[in-house]
Length: 567
Ligand SMILES: [Zn+2]
Image 1 (spheres, rainbow, N blue to C red):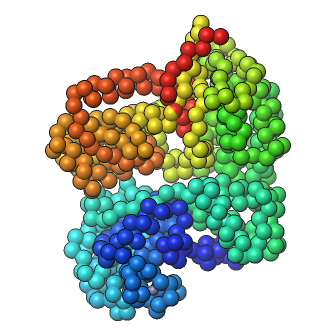
Image 2 (cartoon, rainbow, N blue to C red):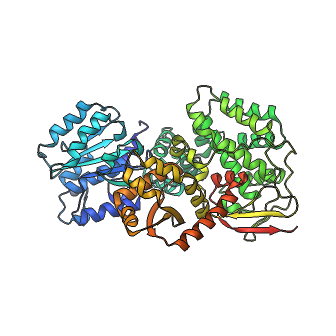
Image 3 (spheres, protein in one colour):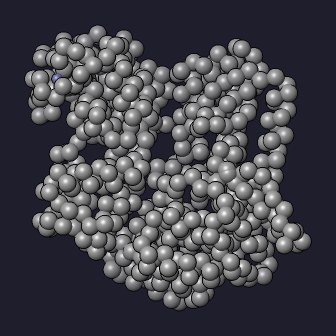
């Protein structure tokens, strides 16, 4: 079986099958039922999350012969079947990656004028549309402006920011989410069940983690595992396939860290590399393990970790031996490696450098003990103090404004972490120890504030008028993943109400902070603005602390207040 076969075989065929994209399914269903179908859609999101499947389902739905529009696509009529079987001449799928020229675009445009031969609608599905050349975009633009009634375009891209604003503004845009681990596990188990294969405990999860949100990758791994033709897939097979030498090598590495044994740590890296293991996967495993240590150390419940008993016991022992500051510093170092490992021509060098940075370069600051919250099981032992080294420039990454797009595409696994409160120590305070409890929405708001001016700047090439509007607005607060923007007048609010303009801001924000945030404009009086400004100053103070900065990149946390600890 080819590695794509399983993904194709179990590709979603109806809106019901489309995993993890409920918001999109609902909107498309409503449009179909009300017969209010747009002439151009843009599906954006990471690879392997169902964009192409959704495009096919939509192609079927607009052409389905079922008389009740609410039941389209039926999957059984001749139109639905023709599309599934790939013999529908009126559904034209094209991969822009291999058809980037203006001639390709012209060819489409010439043919688009002809009526469909079999169906009601001629549907053009253009995948990876950002790959089109500028000339091709311009040619396409004219058609998108005034498409014939019988034609419809579904554009898909993993990199919407490379799609010109003129195209964006003519499409209805849907943002596909990365699959959650839970969604991926459920789908893997369902497919395995349908295929009559039993997955041993832990197998689906190991695959889901390795696939980092891409169902296509998950299916491809399952496909390879099923290639052995066994009725039951053992965990060890997944681990050897993924090159995830799994917990043992990771534990050895962390043990070497705990013993400050550089030679032992480097030898682990070389063993892994010699085995031909996937270094990125290994790095993700290290990050995942360190995240576990961080959670244990900061009083999080062991339930958050989702690991077996053996691993948990080792983790608990490691967490006793290590200082939170060291764990955070290592997390910072290792979670930033993914992009480097993907692009480096130097094999394991980035990992070796990370080891040396982690152990040879001293930890930045001594940090006070974390105290547990919500009465969880407290790690009683005081952390070993970090070496009292001269303070070097903070090794912390710059503010979120500089998040590299590549990292945004492939965030480290820890992003999947369930929102969890934790306590992180602030800058060392000589007398009283100060603890800051962090909250997700506040952290996110601070991140938005950090990139706000950049977002306004980024708007310029797309919509200079909107840029001018936004310059006199400011973020007021963030709730339910929606940024409330304070505006000075009803005119400004109206600009933010405009769907196209609002989406543009949302897109640029998503690009800057690495996750989807919705925006809403609301007129704010002077009082509200002053209060927002005070709150912002306070947040800025807190965010100055680089340990907190590191922590907020690692897990979702919440600033709920500052506690004095007199002990
Ligand atoms: Zn049908």
